[in-house]
Image (cartoon, rainbow, N blue to C red; front, top):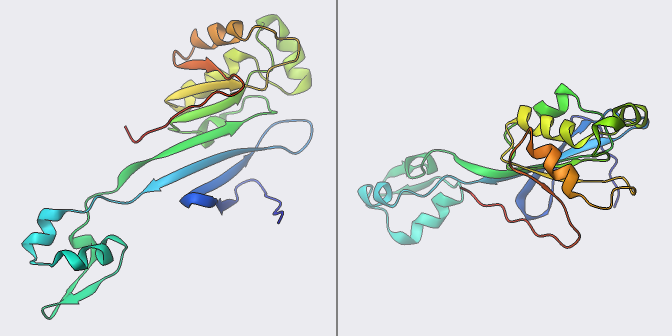
Amino acid sequence: QIHELKSGEQFALPGGLQGSCAAASHGVPCLAYRAELLRKPAFQVEQAQALGLPVQLWSRLQHGEALEYNGQIITPQQVLGPPRRGISLAFITDTRPTKALSEFARDVDLLICESMYDDPGDLVLARANAHMLAEESAGIAQAAGAQALLLTHFSPKIVDTSLAERAARQIFANSRAARDGMVVTLDYS
């Protein structure tokens, strides 16, 4: 099944992920994507015990169901803690840098962003082809307050991505160049 997305649209992804997209600045229509794994509030065992709730009822409350116990209505809010931080990532490619894309990637754990060019001397070419320098990708990560930047979508002329990585790290220290087969683990820290 194919569903064509438009900028600003939100959508559900497998595994409980929530997705959204934003317009990129390229010669043809392109979108940037963001995925978030929302996290449920922690169950407060002490609160449930203070209410005298049997363990058998806890899962119903954890799943958002209000219930009646001993003539009282017990709501999930009575036994769940405050909202907890989830995990998020943004994928931005085929674009020039824009303030809107920095806002779109605000506070992501991982920004996967194009780095078509690694040489600042290629800025004219980057502008003409609507792509980014490594430094510009790092600028988006910095402005967005991202936790980490993973550079990707390199020009075929780039044989050694370490130059792009070094250039990006001058602006955003937690930058790495993506490599084939690379695995990145995100956690709730």
